[in-house]
Every structure is written in structure tokens, then in C-alpha cells.
Image (cartoon, rainbow, N blue to C red; front, side):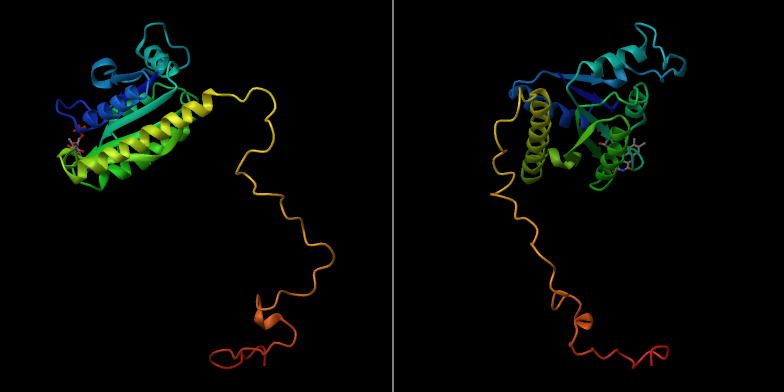
Length: 231
Ligand SMILES: Cc1cc2nc3c(=O)[nH]c(=O)nc-3n(C[C@H](O)[C@H](O)[C@H](O)COP(=O)(O)O)c2cc1C
């Protein structure tokens, strides 16, 4: 199951729309997609007293169970004041520091303007790292204007394709341990035998590498004349 965590409480949310489009792609590829609407399912502040030993049924236990049941995660957030939403951070604060271990994490952010969303994704990368996850290189930093049909939407769709492809590639690799010894060299890893070190002594400095240091080379004039200390 791939878990989509939605950090927007807006009724007509851009980040929700984009997350759903990512989810559709995942399902078309044969994955199960599970969207968690954090504003509806986990609206309460995280309880610090539950952190070490969450009581069964508590919000902390439930958030952790949802993440534990996933093989990959998508985080979707609105941009609020140049960052990701408190709703999403609150959900992430329920988790332990290894909650995302072994999981790829895709990032989606929607801002009012074109610039803030990239910054929110970058900040989420730090949080994902703290939780042991692997942020995918592709992120979808977007704005409502990208949902209008035409070139921006096509570009958005392309980035979603890339994001989903990266998530799935990671999941497939992580899920498929190589049985037994690897049969022979990995094709394409090394082209032919690795050239060994040059035998015998190195014959002097490489000409042209440090022109001034090669014996017999003409010293270059120093701009401004000789240094007093050296003359
Ligand atoms: C409190 C608040 C702060 C915001 N700050 C920013 C901001 O710093 N940069 C930005 O591009 N958009 C900002 N916005 C606009 C939202 O990011 C934008 O409406 C976006 O569509 C919200 O995502 P959503 O539709 O998924 O809820 C802000 C909106 C609110 C309500």
C-alpha cells in the first residue's frame, strides 16, 4: 500500500487534486493507494504522553499503524508562509525517527505563487531524512494555475509521471532481494577490465600541470613585478 498524507484542510484543495492524480497513476500501475485526509482523520495535536508507548486506539497508534502498513509515502501540503502546513507536521510528529525507513517518499506542494512550493518541498526533505525515508529526486511543486488545461497541466502531468515512476522503481528494488550469489558481473557497471596502475616509477611531474614547477620551463612574469620578500 502506498500512503498519501494530505496536509490541507481546504475544501477545494490544489494539493488534494494533485495527490489524487498521483494516486490514480499508482493504481493504474497496479499499486494500492490509500489517501489519509489528515484534517478529517487525525485533527488532534499529537499527545507527547503517548509518544513512547501509544495506547491502543490512540491517534498516535493509528497514525503509526497507517505508516507501518505502507511501502511508500506521498506527502502533499499547501504552502503556508513559505513552508509546509502545520497539519502535516503534526501528523509527522506522531511518528518515531525510523518511521519512513526503507520507504521512498514523494513530495507535493501547492502554493499561491510559483516559488513557495519548491521551498516547502525542500524543507520536507529534511523532515523525511529525520524519519529515515528516501525522498525521490522528482517533486511536484505546483500552483492552481497548473491545473488549467494546456501546457502547464501537461508539464504537471509529466512531473507526476516521473514522481510515480521513481516511487515504484524504488519499491520494486527494495522488495526484490537478489536470491543467492549475483551471477557474474553486473552488465554495464564496468566496461571491460579496470585498467591497473601504471607500473614502475612515475617519471617526473606531468608537463603542463604546474608550468612553473616543471624544470626548464620559463617562469611566468608576476603581474606588478617581483614580490619584495622574494627578490
Ligand atoms: C495562512 C496562509 C499562508 C500562505 N502562505 C503562502 C506562501 O507563503 N506562499 C504561497 O505561494 N502561497 C501561500 N498561501 C497560499 C496557498 O499556498 C494556496 O492557497 C494553496 O493553493 C493552498 O494549497 P491547498 O489548495 O492544497 O490548500 C498561503 C495561504 C494561507 C491560508
